[in-house]
Each structure stands twice: as structure tokens, then as C-alpha cells.
Length: 216
Image 1: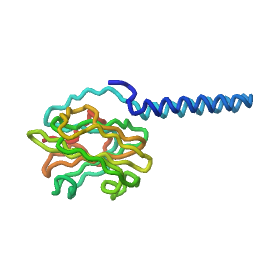
Image 2: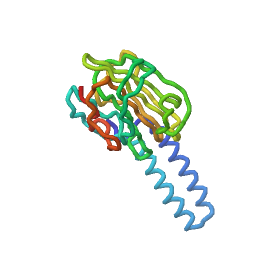
Image 3: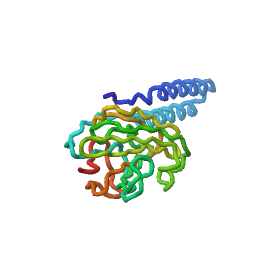
Image 4: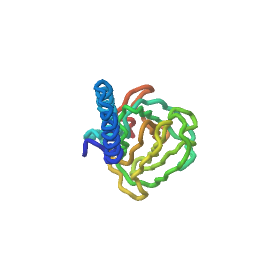
């Protein structure tokens, strides 16, 4: 696994070109303190871009009946809801909010087969807004195996303007492998059958591929 995610390559290259051009332009004024400020600011900005697109290597150690976190972040919702897009029945929802400083790679939480994968254009409400799960730009993926079917949804936030989803219907999903990426702040919702044993609590900080969200 590469330490920088492929979704960042173009943005990182563009950022480098722009920063070099800006620093070259500023250097033409021959003002030493201004040059220094721009160099320091450029290095800090470049560091922030690189850390956003980081892609840490994380081996999945969970057992087959354990659902791992599909993303880094904080658990902001654990509640019973009506899932209206695919299952059309009551489900147990767990939502993970990703801040701009979190790793934004999204990974499959279980093994199985992709039964459903759909992209929805939409608004850019803040990710914790109650209507963000139905009105924001989002994707919906359902993975099913012989024990359970789990729906997970990428939701864009106020800063995110592009969701990337790699999943296609009938794909084989392998726990821990990338299924997408959300740029600059967002949320991932998971929907489980009623009665699933949830292994996290509200406000708990979770790590993708490491934290066990639920057991079945």
C-alpha cells in the first residue's frame, strides 16, 4: 500500500507548481523577510496537503464476524432509523465523522459481494446536519455475505466537493481494501440489521481497519 493515496497525486503536483510559482514571484521583490514568510507558509501548507492524502498501512486483524471501521474519525450517531434507499426497513445506524485532519481513505468493513453501488449528487451541508445523509452528495454501497448485509454511505461535508467510489455491483469486497475516498471533511454511515452487537460508543475515536465497530 502506498503512503500517499492516488487521489492526491494530481492535487499535490498542482500545489507544488503553484507554490513554486508564487515563491518565485515573491522573490522578485528582493524583500528577505517576505521571502522567508512565503517559504515557511508554503512548507506548512504543503505538509497539510500531504497529511490529508496520507494512506497508512494497516493490516486487518479482526475475525470474520467482526465489522471494522471503514474510516478514521469520531462516532457521532448510534441509533435505530428507517433506511429508505435499499433495505426499506428499520436498521441500526452508526455514523463516523471525519475531520480534515483524519485519514480520508474509505475501506470495506466486511468481506462479501457488492450487491448495490450508487452515487447521488447533492448539497454540501455540514456533515453532522440531520439532513446531510439524504440531501448531500453521497454514495451508497451494500456488501453482503452469507451471514450479514451491511449498507455504508459516504457523505460529503461542507468542505468536501468530491466523493470517489470504486465499488461496482458484483465486485468482490475484501475487508480492509479501499472502496473510496472523500476529499476534505465528511462522514460515513453504516446500517446494520436490528439486533447487531455494536462495539463502539458515542464520541469514541475510531481507526479504519483497526477498530471493531460491530460483531455478528
